Image 1: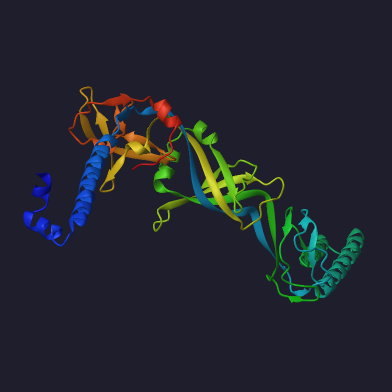
Image 2: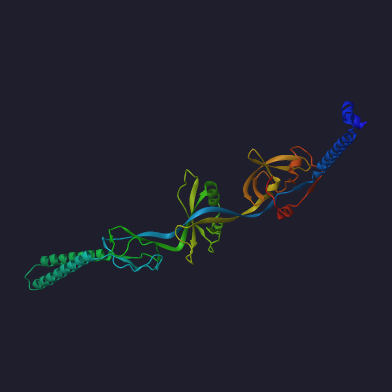
Length: 382
């Protein structure tokens, strides 16, 4: 009997001995129930195998967004320095104030320069009187023409010294060279400042220069694009709080050389700052938006990796499975853009990747159109 084969006669005798027949019956029941459960689990495991789903690559235009960390600079950001040595007079500007070109920012007490100008004006007036007197004497034929020319030269020299003194006096007044915003004031009224000492900084925030580093491969991709494609490049700016700056930017410049340590080259994007939201020194993220035309796209779920290389299973017309290596150009949510290894007419395994292997034959499969699959993607590659 089955019970005799499973439980040796000697062991059964031990269990039955001492009135343990009920114990033997319990153990036997548990054993047979476990055996039946195992058989049922095996049957369920065999039923888990799903039908293999096959699809094709999709040829489509793919919008791409490349993010780059950036630093934001004013178009013009300068240090405003004292042009002469002296004591600061009353300061009429405030930190953060908007000023116009030509507005007075600082005045240095011009005691020495004012006195020098007065002296030069007096010298010029004296030279002019001497010239006038010499001209009268020349008319009376008392002096020669050479004497007149000598005094004319003295007048010209005196006037030149006056202009120099006026320029030095004007240096005592510091004016705004362009429209902008005043930064922190480094000196206060009454401070003794020296020539070249920084008084404040001035920023022209009407146009912002946004710098970001681009890898060499992306630089080469950009340079081979047509002028029309470059001009249509849409650039967005994401600020530190995650909001998007309302104005769109454009590439303004590319620096002359690469950084050999990082392999990057700095790009500059220009953004109009009509509302004055952006300030010098801010940070953010630049988004370069472009479109790949007629790109080959497949679901990430249809791929797998072996030793850092990515593969798919391709099904031929005889339903034979072939392992094929692919090259991924861009990775997006749930999909890969392929630039090598697949054609639009190929058929590849989408579901059931683990049920097939290289050289096997797919007997039970169904074809799902790529449009339908791309519309319901939820998972990344296995």
